Length: 206
Ligand code: VGL
Ligand code: ZN
Image (cartoon, rainbow, N blue to C red; front, side):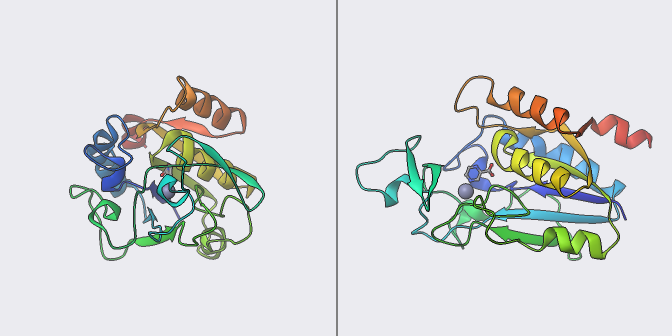
């Protein structure tokens, strides 16, 4: 069973969004080209309550980019983004979504962030994605979306740790790059851990 996992292609990560990633919306046509080549498409949706503790706004005196302790682990503070039910949390309007697609929402717990589509950042709870993939007989997944250095990176590393074969379509990913080179380093790390870099062109040829 071939699976395409589309990570967080939501308005807040695109042009004009609350946590806009440079050229985030440029991934949309590429992701749309990828999807017909897969038997199943799964999307993740960052889906925070307004009081989420990854938001700088919910820590008086702190600003986006600061790091705080959240339940014993360091947490980067972000501008408020992908608030449940808000326009910013919706998928980009040009992203093709079909009724049979599966959507995994994450980051719903006020006290925990969840970059990975598999687990929250503290690895307390599984989202059920790994179990689902095993149940449908999926051994290999192809991952694209936003952001290369956060949700894509964590998702890829968890997928590898769960022993899936992982392809990352880096041209259909964009990163935040809080520090110069974060996305490039994330790609190197994913490769070192065993991810294969795929291109839209190469998938077309298969
Ligand atoms: C993301 C920061 C905060 C992401 C989500 O989708 O990569 N990054 N929440
Ligand atoms: Zn988030």
